[in-house]
Amino acid sequence: MRRYLFAFLVTLVASPVKAFAWGYEAHRVIAEIAEQFLQPQTAHQVRELLAIENVTTLADVSTWADEIRPQHPETAHWHFVNIPIHPSAGEPKEFDAVRDCPRDDCVVAKIEEFERVLSDHQKPDRERLEALKYLVHFVGDVHQPLHASNDHDRGGNDVEVTFMGVPTNLHAV
Image (cartoon, one colour):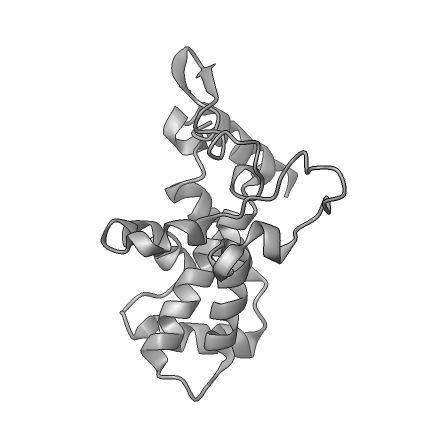
């Protein structure tokens, strides 16, 4: 196991800068890890839903929510939650739905919503599959620290950095 971990880390460090972004590769890795922990009955149900679109793994659908975003701009706020890093005096330091997710328009609310849709076997399978695809992506997004905090820097996009000699922004790195 140690050898595999070392090989993975070497590959990660030697990868081009784009591989470090919380993008395609990261979402696929998160989905592959999650799939390994599914109970057999759940894995079977997931495979049945994925088969509707002729795909076989969660990794295959892990970037779908980003891919459809240009056609569905209303989903932009669904990929993050703005929890203040330095809340005002008297405000909670942890997630507060009223403050951090107005109109249920954030990743936390959408994870809860799509979990309900996916677990409702009365819903059409296509609707449940869409919920699964959103869930796979959003669980990855919410674990990206810049997608779950607010320092008034647009998730690190406004913080300029140089990484491996290339000017970029903190979010990309």
